[in-house]
Image (cartoon, rainbow, N blue to C red; front, side, top):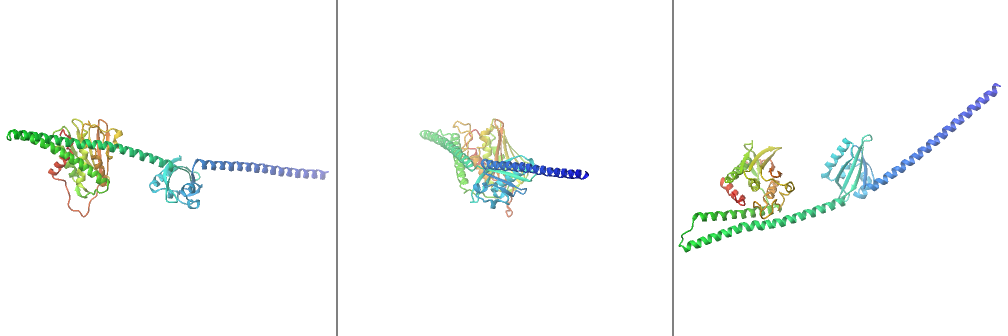
Length: 440
């Protein structure tokens, strides 16, 4: 009897084991089927994502922490001409044009630090030596230590934008040239008319005096006429000089004569000479610096011309009781000269144009002051030939500041130091420079 029970028990155990095995196999089958379905869904999703990326972007790539390309699509070949074998394991920055490489690296570092998506536009190298504009978007995945990049070819848009800008600049330049020619016609006719009428008056006075046997000619009147003629001859000389200088500067024919100079002395002399020249007006010009002497290599005639142009411009657009402060400072191994006034100021919309060729803020023929608008253009060229920079700051009805700075350098084998022109030379330059300001 016990044997029967033992046999039944053994049979039950075997049946239970079989059931368990069958259950496990069924479970495994279900899991395998589920995993297989899940894998298929993942693969389908991956394919959809890949298709979406190919449609939405031209290039996509994965970079490691060293910015080496570890995966990419066919975009590098389709857009830039590089095959996959030529791209993989190469540093991504190698395909960026040098001027744009720094900003790309900066954007990648910022993206890595913030965890945000970064966008940047860069000129990229093609295999055939040409360049294309690519708009890159990237994000750093911290837990995998990789950079995800997508790129969109915007070369056509860039070229169209550049064409539009070039066309607009050409139209603006043409408009400025037209205004310039009208202005030049006025600038030439005015002094010539004054000279002509003055000579006519003198001729009439001399004729009348001859009829009276030489009696009746007043020396003071002749002197006044002579002064009017001289002033307008100066004005014509100034206009022709500025036009000639601009032509030379634009054709790269202009050469500076660099010598070691005390630039403090040169700027001080010009400032004080102009202050003396303006004594008949209410304009007060002061010079301020804490530097007694500063030797640097420059062209002294060019520095004098820059100063005269800036001061002349300031005086033309002055208010009554205007104050002009000229200051000289040193920063970062550069000498900086600032001409600051409390005059009428310059509108913000006009500020970016004042140093351009043919530009003049007030182009109307009934403007308050004369001038061709060439002085600031000449000054910009002369400063840049010194490897310096010039700019302006202004507030309408509050005043303007014109600032230029040039690097401090010295000619080592040059022992002589130039301290400035003679008083007579500076006076002659002031007469020419301020010849178109009639109330001084």
